[in-house]
Image (tube, rainbow, N blue to C red; front, top):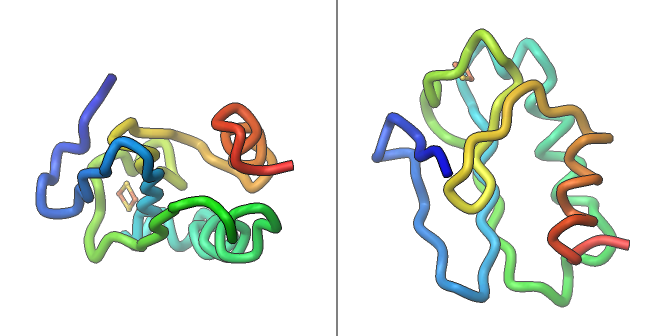
Length: 95
Ligand code: FES
């Protein structure tokens, strides 16, 4: 499991909590990071799950693979809303 290079942007999760940090850096914003944030905030089944959604204040160091995000401490690269939906399904927190 890869960890974010920039420790100040990492939010460590409790065991039963999922943490999603979407990169707020300029490259990721231009590549659609806002769409990822909006998707997470509007995801239908996240209401009953302990989920924390945040946007980093700075680049998380994976600009070449923008938009990037951190899911429970793991870097996800080239994330699209469709891929994000797949991740939520894999975690069992979206239907
Ligand atoms: S701007 Fe998002 S990884 Fe650099």
